[in-house]
Image 1 (cartoon, rainbow, N blue to C red):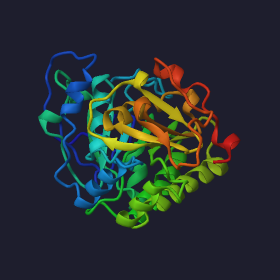
Image 2 (spheres, helix red, strand yellow; image 1 turned 30 degrees about the vertical axis):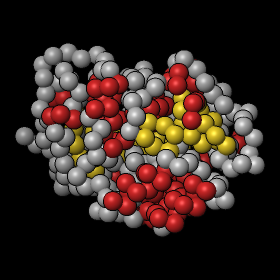
Image 3 (cartoon, rainbow, N blue to C red; image 1 turned 60 degrees about the horizontal axis):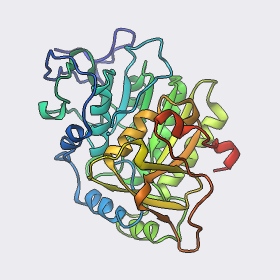
Length: 340
């Protein structure tokens, strides 16, 4: 059955792949983090290079492109049917983001550079996705696919990164971020959230150097992508069209701790390990948080924090901890004030 986009969105048949995922008629309002974590197995298309980079990340940084159910308030709240578009929805973190959104009853448009469909086991138990989940082609290396894929979305989450089949770092992590930023501004998407990486501004740090050695300059390209995004929003974004750059620490497959177990920071001087579950949860919460608009921040587990370089102080002075998602985003400093 070919029906992908909501009725308020123009359907581009040459870009849209359609399928209806298997579903259950049972209602579902929340899901334990253990259930969501259990479905975070890697897709068959994951490359050995990407796995290697993620393992390196555990030494001291994260490659964010690669959940704890925070409350979510979408900027375009007047239309609850407006989907949240997730780029890189086949990836480990992208899949967790989709699962969390579905578990909250949110409409999701899962985007990838090639056709795919989630297995039934990837859908949170009890969620009827017949009216919640749609699929579309959204290839960040092909700008012409992006506006049709995100049209009518209330938010866009960029959880893509370089992979063997999906594109090199220059095309995805740098040019791809610029491409989606241009499309989100053109389509007036209320919020674009890009998952980047901690340590991208610190080329003298061990994590930065080792990752670049094995991933062919990906850290510098991630930072260049961030900078292009910020420049575009500063010069071209109309009021109400905003972005968030999320820089996670080293990624793990551990069970998530939730908002009370993580710390947000700015200045990129503190690093730490963090589960993909918590990265996904932070992303889902941040897209609807007014205090997370036009900001860049790092995120890691409180118990695994450490200065990124030995000469850095134990605290940056910009740490954020809280017991709720609403509170933890309060006090973040806008990029324009930080001169990121």
